Every structure is written in structure tokens, then in C-alpha cells.
Figure 1 (tube, rainbow over the protein chains, first blue to last red):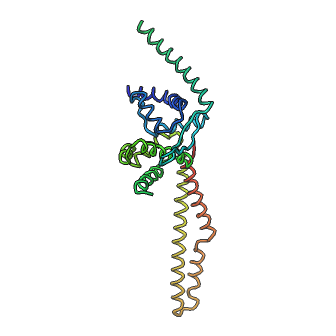
Figure 2: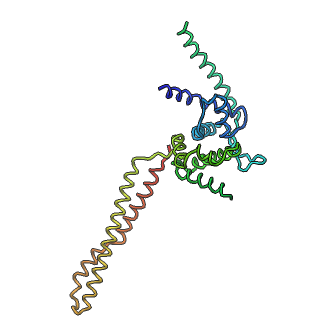
Figure 3: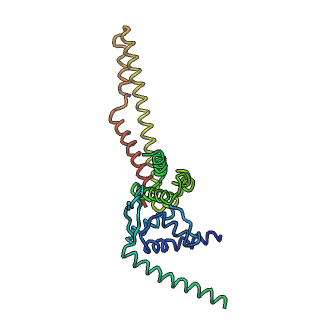
Length: 114
Length: 161
């Protein structure tokens, strides 16, 4: 039950976090997975397959763009993702909504403990 | 291409074959999948470690199919009607073919008997067998039913959301 609750919470915020990570800097799938895992102390340890539908949704909505990069010394090209202007604007909206959400939920729990 | 590259290409192809996704989505996923493998190699992971983490092609494809469900092909119940047409068309073609072969064989047998010496004796039976021979038009109709069924089966099994 607790596992399911955690899964639902993670699912709810994953898209926001992926967009946030891409807005911070141009990146690629594997780096996104590593960043999310390390920055959250292992809470968001995702598989590649979990990431793809989110990336495609963001790309289809015009929030991010993909391109192929062939860096120096690299053996194979990598698919890079970068935020668009629309994506950057959406990130700000996400942050705002997240703040309001946190404040509201925290307020609810504080009321209970007082 | 080195042995390692061949092995990895074979692995990716095996994963791709097992994806139940429209062609464009499949290409998109495999681009990311291959890109991710390249990145893992750059990060110092060995191919063995990558295979161990991603699992067998069947396991890797199962994970991708599960996560990409919203993009997967939808199977319409109408595909069963198409399958029925395939079976009916196939059976009727087989039946007509069998009847045609038997007719041919019997006609040949009667003709060879008639050469023994009974002139005109085989006319009646030959006429009967010839009229029971399946018509080309009939066969074409069943071929059309079979082809429509096959196309329908593919179409109704590969519908997009």
C-alpha cells in the first residue's frame, strides 16, 4: 500500500522534474536518469523505459526539442534534449503550482498538529 | 564492425522486434535506447554490465512495452471477424482445390479407361465431373475473401489510439 502511494506521488511529479532537469541544461536520457537518481538520494531510480513516454509527451507538446550530438572523442552519437521557450515558461508555472501545492498540504498537516 | 558492436546491434535488433509499437514510435524508442547504451559505455560500463542491467531482449522489450502502453497498438475485436474470413477463404480455396484435383484425376482415369475400347461410354460421367469442376470466378471470390481477411486482421491488430 505504501509502495503504491509512493509510486503515485512519484508519477505525479516526474514530468515536472524531467522538464526541470532539461531546463537546467541540455542533456540526454542516461544523464537524466543519473541526475534524478543522485539528486534524490536514490528515490527516483528509473529505468529507461519510464523516461521515454515522458520525454515524448514533453517533445510532442513543444516543451523540449531533441537533436543528435556527436561530441569529440565519442564513439556513437547521443540524442540530446533541450528546453524550448515554451518549456522554460512551463517550468516557471510548474514551480509556482508546486509551491502552492506544498504550502497547501503543509498547512493542512500543521492545522492537524496544532 | 567489431564483435562487440555486432553483439550489441544484434541485441538492439532483438529488442526492437519485440516492441508492440507503431513503426515511428519504435524508431523513436530505439534511437533513445541505442543512445542510452552509448552513454553507458562512455560512462565506463562494460557491455556485460549493460546487458545485465537491461536484461534479456525479451525482458528489455517487456519493460519498454509496459511503459509505452499509451503508444501501443490497440487490438480491435473486429480482428476476429477478419480472422473468420481468412479461415473461411482458406478452407474454401483448399476445398475447391481438392475438388479440382479429384475431378482432374477422375477425368484422367475415365479417359484412360475409355481408350481401352468403350467408345462413347465415358461421355456421361465426364460431363458430370466437368460441371462439378470449381470455376475460376469462384476461386477468385474466395481468394478475395482470404486477402481481405488478411488485410483486415493486420489492420484491426495494429490500430492506433
